Length: 229
Image 1 (tube, helix red, strand yellow):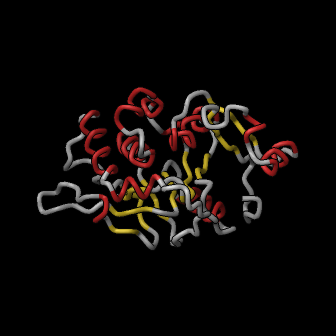
Image 2: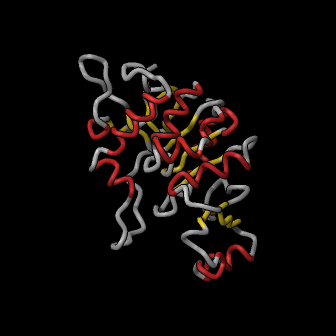
């Protein structure tokens, strides 16, 4: 992020006190140095909302700003922010993403399983049929979302393991369409052999599908209507 052609105004890292009980004493010295030099802000949160942390606090704290979400376990191109901002100026009041899937449907217009959706490799949208993956660098205007996005009880009971599902369903409820940039790449992951990526579990074990059904049903959205223009 420090090498972006369009630099961010602020970089914020949200960490749970449950995972880092000694706060700054629990994190690597390199992060402490960046914080002390003012290059990043580090916020320690009560409880642990898992992957939901990256939007839950930033959207509320910077609701009137442009917020770009990224996962911290990937390497990114230096034009990442520039390309998002260019499309944002062209398509305001939309979610702009670098990674997304086209939601496909069966002969009865019900959505297919997540594993059968089409990966988008070129520009697309605005559309409600694009399912954006937030951590691949996605631009938001937080104040466009309905306030139930921050309903902690619903997050935990309906969609605790899939922040992307939660964000996409609430984008649909809020009438926010998705625009995909022309960029496509399988971002190079920062590997940790002891870690199993949550995104892999969600796809391999069908957890995305389960949470889509459970969440859309709770909000009264018919399976034929969800993610449909």
